[in-house]
Image 1 (cartoon, rainbow over the protein chains, first blue to last red):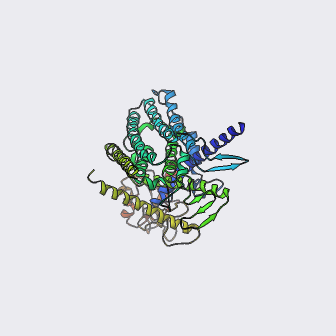
Image 2 (image 1 turned 90 degrees about the horizontal axis):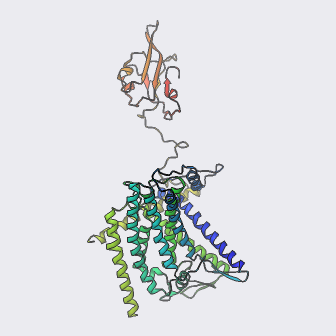
Image 3 (image 1 turned 135 degrees about the vertical axis):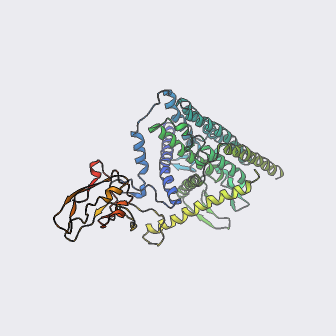
Length: 359
Length: 155
């Protein structure tokens, strides 16, 4: 029993550390990627003992700056709520990562350890619920700031996130119809199979429309630039208005965590999670008939690597989109959610049902 | 959404353009990293303090007084630059001189860079081409006001 607790503890610490590190370096990736897209170089001056490493130390410099900034409480704000808002926001997003499987089962000292912190029966619902709870962080923040712009921003945010929550849920219904379970480990296991004998049975091939709706709704859920209604830097400063220092940093960090959560969800649900195409437990089995046997540890490493690579790719894609598109107008965001994504989700459900019934 | 198709195409075209920039620039950055010099660079950035772009010959930088062959400033203290200066940042103290070739020269020629707007009117007004703004010195910032007051006759 103590061993089990220890194993879970180690997995929690590892998962959280890795996710937070990834979020920290995503700030660097965002700066660098936007710079390269715009023919610039980007932050490259932060150095430790003259070692620059393409500005890889920049996130630490930013973090130190955030720590030492004044932690400001506006005069009329409600102290406790003002402090609680970023914490709630951060917690609700960070906790979703525990349900995501990042690798298959490892055999260590005679035990089989699944590379996932908790294997919830309704993990999909848990993640959606937690992401919806994140709205409270924004709402509380806007309310507690006692600032009209903050309140407008947070109400906009609530309206947007609730609308897109509907679209997000609908886009996943088709997936739930096709896949046998809501358990993420079972979902990933199922995606290891083959479609028509050669295609990996990934969600994207079974639910292409569902993926499009899911990814767009998810991007709206991260409330970053094309959909940054709650923030709206150029018109209202949004629910951040009265935040500074570490509390603002926590909000910003939450945004990057959301990017990672969306990327890992897209990976897990639609791109086979930790599956590598045609890689079984004993090694590669190619559809043409070729085989390449691999040791179990190599298979595990490949699978964890594959999960991370896919997550990196989707983070990259989201940052690319964030630096490509200008922001929507508020009514356009609402139109897009209710008139495009929700119908798309419904059509996807109908089509999936039809195909399942005919087959 | 009657334009949905067209909107969709433009959205994809947009992300295609930015992705192309990303990959092309990344390719050039990677080549450079491995020591392969290409004519085109991955970025247009000039890393300023280490790297400098050549200034245009018409660029207005810090003023200087052109010296005579014997080393004294060629300024004749006619006060035309003081008169024309829109920022009123030039101060000249004229002194008589026995040498008939010179007659007058500036005992003090002070430019207050705090006020100077680098319009170059003083250069245009000078009848003897004594004041010029071609030193190429553009790092003029100072932490004190006194540091911005430059005495051109002694410098």
